[in-house]
Amino acid sequence: MANPEPWYGVRLIYRLTGLSRPAYEERVVLVRAESGEGAIAAAEKESKVYESETAQYVGYAMAFHIFDENGPCLGPGTEVFSLIRQSELDPKAYLDRFHDTGNEFARSDSEV
Image (cartoon, rainbow, N blue to C red; front, side, top):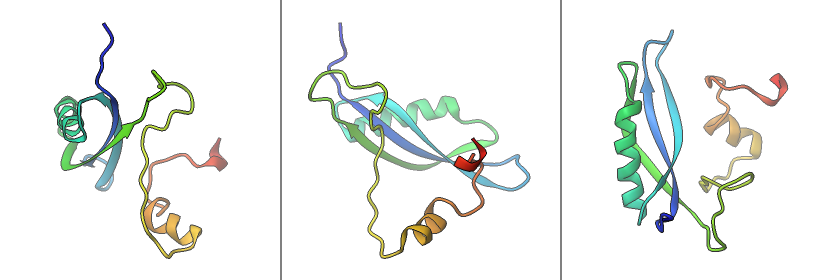
């Protein structure tokens, strides 16, 4: 029997230790729940499995409902998370401030 509850993407933040210097990890996990609050509760429950001596959940979670009015939607191109932030910054300054500070452990397009 199919699960009638909608899908949610839940963003969780962890403090990482054990690296050369402290860092934070943002994860987005998919869960089914009846509400955003239920989705956060489900993701936080899953988070306990993910946590370790070097990855501690900091208590911040944000849920995003994945709309699927036209039937099952998970597949290539499905939006699983979205955040809109008001900002007067130009695109480069915005990325430098919030996403590309130089301290990320991420591969850039130039490294592909």
